[in-house]
Image: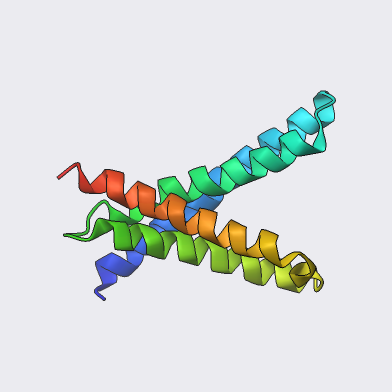
Length: 123
């Protein structure tokens, strides 16, 4: 992997995390200001994962030649692994809810792949 490719991957993952932080701050504000239900917040978090990985996948695959969906998958996997590691450090009981952990990973990967696929159509 060339240096430019590594930089592009880092840019994509950082962009995904910045976007995720902005969306989570917005969700926190909505939770604070309005009386939203827990299901709305959970839905917002899931949408955040998918959309952030989607944008990350688009950024990572933008300058790649061919099989851009794989670069998008890489962005989703890296995003998910970082979230998983941080969650394990902060909350050691993360694997009590295994279906949630697996479904989050699948959503991150699919979001990144979709971003890479849509970027593939641009040239």
